[in-house]
Amino acid sequence: MKTYWHVTSIKAAHSIIKDGFQGGWGDAGFGVYVFDCLGRATQFESAGGWDGSLKDSAVIEIEVPEDELEYVMPDPEWPNPEDYECVLWYPMNSDLDENWCPKREIIV
Image (cartoon, rainbow, N blue to C red; front, side):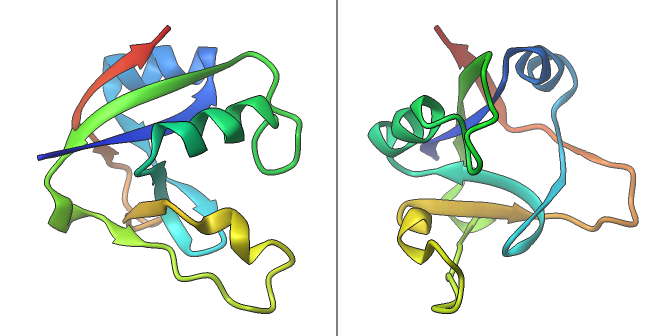
């Protein structure tokens, strides 16, 4: 097991703690995006997420077997490939209504 961090809104964090993660679309595909470095996660949180619009935010700490996650391999054509350093994702099927439930807790 290894520790990772997910940044989201406080409202979504409570739902994630209760019911698990729902997938979302990102540059690598549909799934859940996490950081393998708490410092990078908190930088991302302080910046307001990818577009700066995340205001009331929280960091969720999870424990996951390393082989469940894949590193995001940024396309050099993306406008910010350096932002994906330390970013991994848990791929999910967008056609299924499923939640991913690793061990998780909100970091205050």
